[in-house]
Length: 111
Image (cartoon, rainbow, N blue to C red):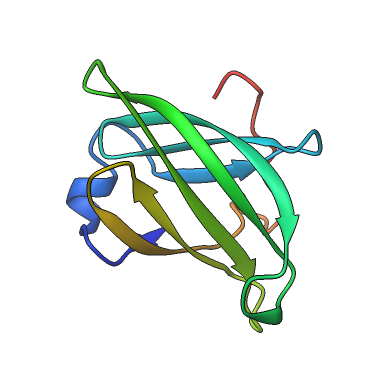
């Protein structure tokens, strides 16, 4: 994952940063010390297949929330923007996690 506002040392602070979408229109995000849950809706930002979402979670124990969007880029990466309510916002770019053999790495619901 790459983020516009923060470098890798920051966004991978407590573990690998990720954004994950489930088939039930819910998802998870983790970056810096933020751990959050998303409520997603199908959308076509910039005319591309994607989602819009609201999110809530914690940042170093403080409650935080916001909104965002993500769309599939021409190269298959996920590009979007995440907003903190009354705070920062940042663009992001993420690629599907893969294992050493190039196969997609499934994430457990608990991570």
